[in-house]
Length: 79
Image 1 (cartoon, rainbow, N blue to C red):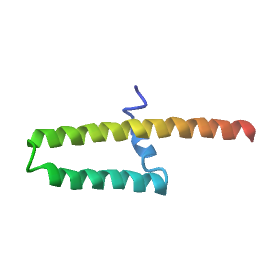
Image 2: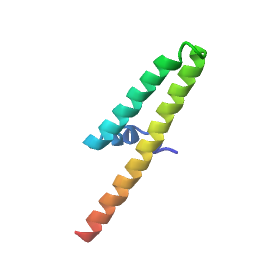
Image 3: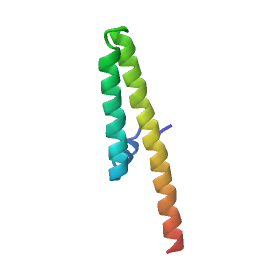
Image 4: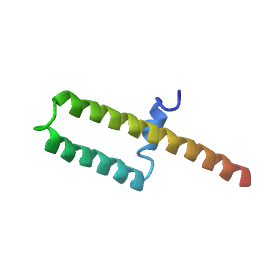
């Protein structure tokens, strides 16, 4: 749980160009969806979905961080 809420997990989201593009695409898709659904649902639902999206991105960053750590350890053991 400590790694999920760390700044390192957030930095892992921006570790490479494909990751940056994925995060930017997800945030852009949320922005467009929020603009589209705002007239139909309450503002707090849009905000709650945004917070859930940010939490999901943070969890994705922690998974990428774990993968980067394991890959680095594996590469160091072979060298």
